[in-house]
Length: 101
Image (tube, rainbow, N blue to C red; front, side):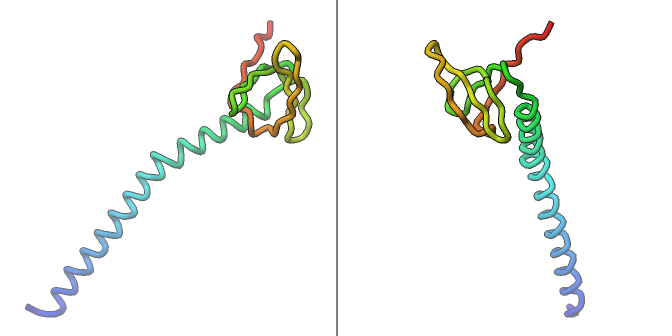
């Protein structure tokens, strides 16, 4: 056997390995990162569209009504005693929009 032939086969194997790794990284990107970006975009849109009067649930499970929005803070009114909580806007998990007639 010639030394050049062995190197030629090894080089092709190396290129195949690199293509395989690139393929796996591409699949991981499609399965993990794209759905995560979609969720983050949807959450940003939901937070940016909040208005006074909307009912929300926080990441801690607190349910309340938005009574004030100021920069990156949201004030909620909760419970029968109308307790007021001021939270960062990223703490909002879900929003129940009132039906507009």
